[in-house]
Length: 320
Image (cartoon, rainbow, N blue to C red):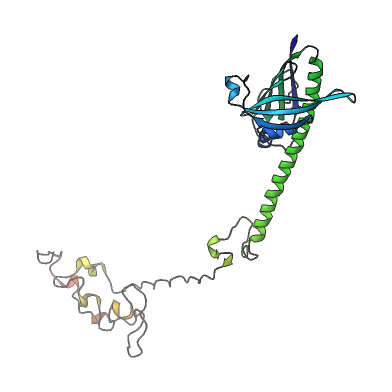
């Protein structure tokens, strides 16, 4: 005569353990089997004939346990078949063992970490409201005589399994932390000592283009272009002398309109770009425009618009 028994065990997980580490262990079937203190041998097998359609595609193993029926008096080895099926947040198992034992188990990883929104938890099971927890739900059917023994043995061995899982997670997290720390130290040591030379604040980062293959580049210093020469207004200029009001017969681009006898013109001491030309030792022209005192207004050969009676100017088709 068989009896069905259901029980649930919730284990809070300590701080410093991530979901990825716990799920990685749950999805490693051979490691989960080896964490059980009763297991003495295991190996993968093909699905047995009694496997249903859903379990046929799961991963099956043959497991041998050493069971102490009477501690210190009588013990024996028990072999059975077990299937494993991974879930996004845990693991499903199904054991078929002698004496009519049919045990289905489900491992579930839940909880919230700091910075994550808190979710409502099931009441009545002692589930913590913060932090990660590991839950095991067991649904077993076994001979009524063996119910108490199988339930007690399962709870005891699985408690040790969870302790080993937590300790293994601590080791994995510590190894990952030390590896990341060593990578940071190696990266800091690989930077040349003068890489941060001239940086005034920690937030200011030197340009990586100043270095090539870990060596500084001697870039030539850039010299700003010289300032443009100042514009000196002609004191003898009047609006009537503007190119638009040029007298009849004197085109605005005429040489006599812009030049005087004492001033050779804009192209003598200055180039086309406005910068001073180098002085010729055999040339007497000044490098800069003459001052007001040096100008002689009587030397202009252009006819002023005021001296012409034809004002306003009327241009025929030849001048347009």
